[in-house]
Amino acid sequence: MKLYEYEGKLLFSKVGIKIPHGIVTEGNIDWKGKAVVKAQILEGGRGKRGLVKVTDDVNSAIQEMRKLGINKFLVEEYIPHDREVYLSMILDRDTAEPMLIASPHGGIDIESSGEVKKFIIPIERGPRGYDIIEIEKYLGVKGLFQVIQGLYKIFTEYDAELVEINPLAVTDNGVIALDSKVILEDNALYKHQDFLKEIDREYSPDSYVELDGDIGIIGNGAGLTMATMDMVKLMGGNPADFMDVGGGADRERVRYCVIKVGSNPKVKKILVNIYGGITRCDEVALGIVDVYNVIKKPIFVRLVGTNEEEGWKILKEHGINFYENPIDAVRDALR
Image (cartoon, one colour):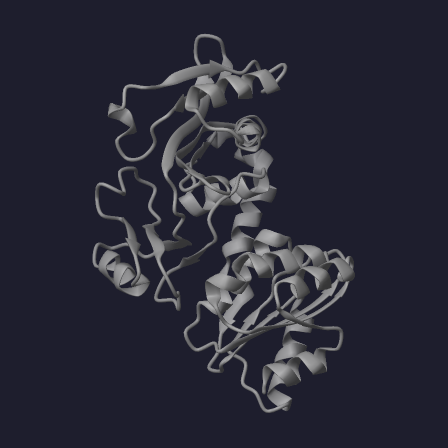
């Protein structure tokens, strides 16, 4: 089973491999600044076919690709970087062991670079520190521990046939996976139903309903989200959406929801109402601050529950309004 790029990156985020902030969309969005627009198709060679574009005009790029029959896009923040490298993991047929393939050159011409080295990682022990040091020396890149551990974990725990990052960007803030290619073994999919359900939940339109207003609404749980919409309406505002992050939402899920709501061009302000039980307030706060500078819209956060003080501290450090009382949050959002 081939995964779309955004699905592969969801796996990356689960194992600690850094990815750019982004949003999956089927149409126009409100995105400020430079971005990378990528057609989501299960085919290679997108870059050579003009299906990956770095642009300051996201919606024009989307409309141009739609003319080619593309109907799903991943829009991501542009990541400045000086170097690109290649990493992947497959099964070595001779030894029946996982094999990591590395190249100091990444990008669309990796096949013709000629510089590729293979590293066998015996499955009885997995990647050790000395393996990673050897790979880092070959590539001339430090800080690959989490990436290599993550590739190995996906390969072994998710029964992958291929896990590939091309390119892996080398930046001042570490390495970031700019692309993903993941193929899972069809006969083992029955073991990974939880992940497949997570994909559906993460990107399902059922948790997001667009309305006619200008106040973006995010809550955890359908009841709390609907109650928040009611408060906005009763206090003279007009909700722009229904967005339920779901129970136990983590940093990545919150990040996705904030970008999804904030990318609606009708939304002027965003109201987040979280009562944390299973959901941790510090995870919610981290997800919000991750994309605060991407959406560039005022956010008002009512945040109480598990790890609330840690969440408040994170929001305060980034100048984001937070509240214990939802009425206060709604009132300020409507000013």
